[in-house]
Amino acid sequence: MDAPWWQRAVFYQIYPRSFASARGRPTGDLAGIEQRLDHLDWLGVDAVWLSPFYPSPMADFGYDVSDHCDVDPLFGDLGTFDRLLASCHARGLKLLVDLVPNHTSDQHAWFRAARSSRDDPQRDWYVWRDGVPGTPPNNWVAAFTGGPAWTWDDATGQWYLHQFLPQQPDLNFANPEVVEAVHGIMRFWLDRGVDGFRIDVAHGIGKDPALPDDPPESAGMPHSALNDTVETHELLRGMRKVADSYPGDRLILGEVFLLSTERVATYYGNGDELHLSFNFPPLFAPWDASRWRRQIDDATHHIVDRFGGWPTWVLSNHDNVRHRTRYGGSEARARAAVFLLLGLAGSPVLYAGEELGLEDAVIPEERRVDPGGRDGCRAPIPWDGTRDHGWGVEDAWLPWPPEADARNVAALRDDTGSILHLYQRLLAARRATTALQTGALERLDAVEGAAPGVVAWRRWDDAGAVVVVVNMGEAALVDVEGTVLVASDGMGEGEAFGGVLGADRAVLIAAR
Ligand code: NOJ
Image 1 (cartoon, rainbow, N blue to C red):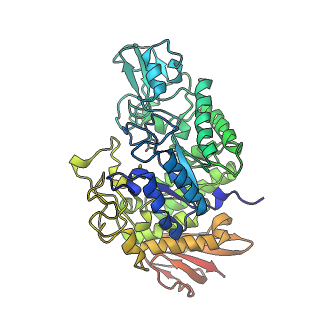
Image 2: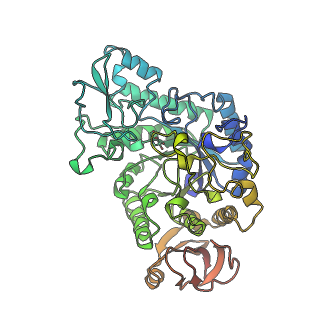
Image 3: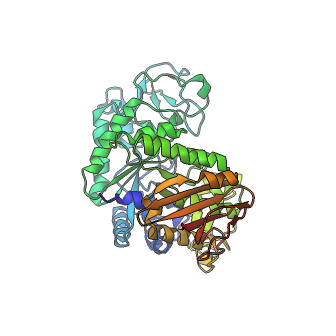
């Protein structure tokens, strides 16, 4: 059987507020994304994941949804969405939307009803507990605030649960009406033709009915990074069935924010839960060869070997400091890092702007807006070197990222030696090399043994073999023979590999 499209695909995350504005406004919109699809075509990615664009009071910039089946006027309307989806499909791009099932906005009609009275028919759609003010039902900590994951509702005299902000009450998936309502949201978007969902906090939706305290050793850790309970798996099986009931390999890609690949792997189930799961331990691993070898082995062992799952690789997104900044700011490292994303076995997820080698923006105190401190990685994409960087407004909702005058799409397109062209060449090589998409992977212990700062692996299938070498240490001798297909510094492409790899350099080699 042919591999489903999502195993061969490279995903590209767009954070709609920050991507492009068609209306000359400080925040991006869906029509702006449609106008910029040429960039994605040229780059050579296969699928787009859109962060939320639904009606929202924006307490968490769209992850507090007040209507899951509409578009916030800030971003357009359902007609604009349909046009964007049609344009993606016309170009052969798949489109995933972000499904946020764990919680709603406190302004959602469901929560307004639930909060109106203890007797409201929708009261039980959220998680309420008796108690007294000042003593939350358990020790769970909310993300972003660091305070209790419970808020006291004075009018009705109970606590409600929120793993995130108080404005994001958790839905109660123990109630079958909630399960059905979420399936209804999925069908709404699947019927419109989306290719699947990125599921927010996929591991968080089920709750242990006893709501036990988190262990003391995890004190201070948000409960959302700890919630790992059997109830969730049945719920994901239900969501998987909804996706699988549509033709065309519709995908559910879950955000499982548990900092253990062993635990993440369990959310692939028995081939009946998530098709794909994010795996964040590699994102948090430093630029260190031994740590990365471990991450690769963990993904292979837990996800592939134990669960028959298909790994994913991601280094940046809208929640974390961009990887170039995390790795110390050097462009050479950012260039080498993309060989991990596009060379390892699994589906890569790129974050808009990493192809420009963007660093996090420096956000002055008075411009900080995110309660989770994540503004830096959400800076707007600079499209050109003009004063408004292609936005039609001189100042966007967040400050421009560093060096936007020179580090923008137009300028880097004009420079064939740029990181943008490196991404394009490596994506093209991946498209042309089935071994890189779906081939087997073996780490090259002998090569790594001779050069401790190096991570090296081989990918192969019936059509051929390639070797990827990433040097996270000092310049090293690398015993691999073959032709350089792509080099992180652009040197020697098309020539025989010379056997020496500089510090923070990477190569893709067609093996002999
Ligand atoms: C994970 C999302 O990626 C993040 O941006 C959001 O704040 C939380 N989930 C809550 O929805």
